[in-house]
Length: 630
Image 1 (cartoon, rainbow, N blue to C red):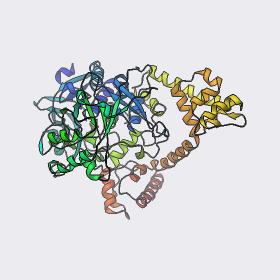
Image 2 (cartoon, rainbow, N blue to C red):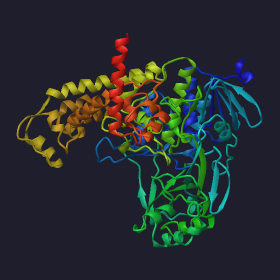
Image 3 (cartoon, rainbow, N blue to C red):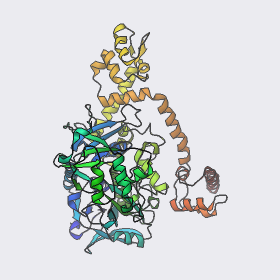
Image 4 (tube, rainbow, N blue to C red):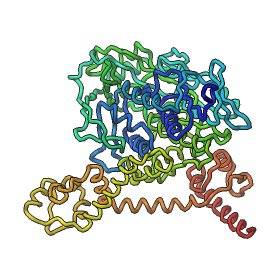
């Protein structure tokens, strides 16, 4: 067999969240995959917080699941707490968050990998790429062993030339206790690929037996469970609480007194850190007017004493970290198991890739995850899935999967990465999407499951679950369109609990549009609705579609209008330097990114509306000229 000769279809470098999704999707589609990792015992490791989801990120996880990925399934199988954030707000910003059992999550994901006969694991550090005629031919590891493949997916996380800082001391590592990936950056540079540096960090881990939880505020999970995966039969597991404490004046005093020992403040770290997840010392300096900051105490799993100190990432010396921690209520006697640290690493600015996540210059070379300048497990997994699908498509001369901004958060994420110069680790936010009311976590299956089926990652059984749900939604929408609620004393008695009242018979759809009324209230006052026993996920969809009907139609119109620019295809061989009335800066950006459509060009940072107008006129003239020549 070819694998005996180190011949594979695809090589995936890195087995974090991006690498796992890339390898699994490729293998399930039929490719022979070599999955290389620095440590096979750290597959799908959560090196930072032991959690999946949160604002915007939960939508990514649901979208991954709808396309046929595995992160949502793994999160559902290994949660120790489920919580719906922003539940009192609109559906566009509601977000599911799962506190995960770290070890169980890793075991679950490794089981999926090892049960797939198309995936071959290898503990190896890839140091070089084999390229022939600007096409991938394989890779070479640290021992000089060559592996041949027509596609390589790089998902190196923070390991690529990683350097860890604890105080003013530093050493080569990608994560605490794991070596860095050395050599591959030089290989990429030799191919003409631009490399830059970013920085991230993680908080300390503390022994839970040394914590006084009585001084903290308990943060329980939800009684009504929600799940990530659209697959039926998700497990109901026991839930465990998190806790909340806060920093204080003493904490801030310790931090300020030791800033001279911070590698970040002393200029030892050149990489830019995550804007939306700053270190505790950065927060204290930047937000000096705040007397305290929230700190969450989160369990790492059921089989360990380790707890994660959320919101307390730091690069200060280990002894200073202990002093800082012991100023927090409940942590006065805390024993630190692992210190916090910062890590600086190499990444490849994604403007060098296409929307398929394949390199613009090296055919068959794909990038996914933190190597593209992102932060977060969910962002990484989403990119890994798309890179895996497209590596398979590349090998089989199939059309690349390129999701639009109007179809998904995944499409928004990738479009932002490949059209904008990212200077700090990119994190998905609901505010990054122009169409967040359409792109909710609850309707990810409606938007993307047909695509997953077409790709080949959604099987017939799961697609039947999807179509049955869609039919139930349509059937219920049709029923309540004309169904009425009578204005009687019994009904108004129930409605009064919600500060509502009706003077006459009213259609269910009209009543459901009132702010204080949800589907549970309809079930209380309408016996027919109660008897139908509508599943909660169907009821949720029906309620949103009715309540936000006007807003949804308005956003659909916006999508339609924006789509007009997508119809203007830009020729691949266009020479921007020869276009008059566009600034040199704009020409440089357009030449660098090479947008496929006018819509993509309009989203490039620094490209002005006037530039788009000029391009539009030029393209219209080009179309007319082509018609004349034909």
